[in-house]
Image (cartoon, rainbow, N blue to C red; front, side, top):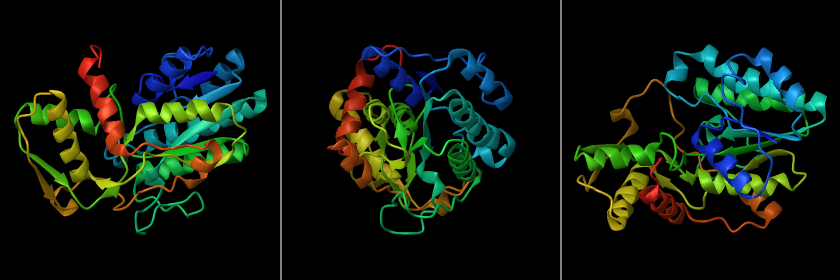
Length: 289
């Protein structure tokens, strides 16, 4: 099988877990598989003929996407569609990773796979267009939406909070955006389980529970302090989104309903707080993170 985005926080976890479970994994570098050049995707797939492509690659710079829509759509829509078309032609399978940002956050109950997407910004629009391109090229593809991803590798909210708190700088975090922090390692484990199913269409997976970014930040500092991290800043000031303006609008509520995947895999999904502890324990001893 072939994994795109293998140097990202989710792709790294997927490749590591697959290799630890004796799967034969290809993880082409950007020089070989550059998703900014979708026209080259077919040749790479034709060369390797993987039985499964796991597309973890994405343009994820939410704010920068507002000024770089062409790059966002090239990677998130055109390259995803090219992967699906190439896999379909080769008779292979595709698992494509998507996002909660396909929704506008206007409702107050968790979003199911049947809810109508309505993205607020370029990032979400490009990811939704990617889902549509994948489904058009390969109706049997599996699309896995997730949210608020963090991990020991790569750049993310958890590591930013630890760095700022470790430097003793003040922290002000929005408290009116609600979602579910989800550990990349948990997502990787679910992806490996999905490999052995014939699931198709759209599935949602996140950790259990929900919180705000402020609640997440507060939990990060409390758990980091308990585990022995240097935490100089102990308090996080809650603020409204209007006090932290950004180029891209974020959904106010982007909790995903995970009922379908729980039933499919018989999952007992960990609470986001427990997964945060697991990630911080890994980070505490990870020399290369």
